[in-house]
Image (cartoon, rainbow, N blue to C red; front, top):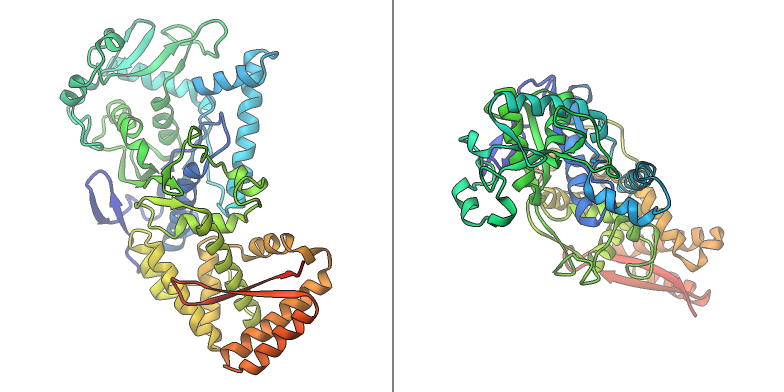
Length: 481
């Protein structure tokens, strides 16, 4: 049964924040567009994965884990994949090269998002598993007068759908005005898009009524979502860049093939991501993959814990633009380390399936207002520092609810310390820092200074850093050179 907390979501289709009312509270269904596996996922790709992972967790809490189905696809047939296969494996047959590229990239994607604390979806269909369904849907569209074959392609006839453009608020006249006639001469309308295209002998292809070929990008998600969730489902999500043409074209295909007015009741889109205030691009040298952050030292000369990346992606409400910076990573890591230390001193760990604090949950059901939810966590932390064990427990439970594994941060911090090779020394220093923090909270400045001097005599240098946003002090340490 659903929780008493009423979830509100901003629906791109209506441009309003609405009460979420599923078609069936015992069968809540969500589809999110996943990766095209030709290259490692970058941090822009990571944002929707984390955002909709949090929504999946929230839905499972509100309606019960057994009553939610989350589908995220993998696109493993695409011309970018073909090009990457030819580049990386020129000596192999194309099909074998494609298989290597897609498997390697999908494996890396799974490892990266797992490091970010994301749950696996209930279903993760691959486009190549649903070619027969795509051919069937295209046949249906042709038979109903919504598609036509021309110049070696099967195209969707956008003029056949009066409601085309409702999601993106674009109309066909606007598209005609901006069309390049030379490119679109074979189309009935400039906005008509590919459902099926013929493949040459050295390109991947499947037999179809229109010749050996491969599907267009948009038809894939229409077929995979319908296969797992039905012709109309509750939530469709993805990045803001997918509203047009991808999601607009999905709606056109699905509604015209199934004879429905809707494909999904609620359309959710996360905002764009920048890096250090600029649009991410390879030409600017600020193109950052999750692999770069997690497994190399490309950013800040070090590796970063997945939980710090996750926190940065949640510090901004999902619909707003996000500026991903090294400073934000440092602050996120420091905050998580501080909370980990606080909970360790309080002697509490998260309780599986616990009901989150009311104020925290109220923030989350308000269109995933994660900044407000994090403000609640800061309040719980302040109370916990004052000795309130219940607040410490609520903090631990809320962090687990958001998918945070504080042990991940602890491992990363310990690995980066010069004294990590001496576990006994590291444990002793951490214990003394905890004692010093307790003395400072009790305003016993003499004891705090004594511990600092004791550590300094052993070559341990402490550094206190104040968080401007919260006013809280974080203590780090290193060995003197």
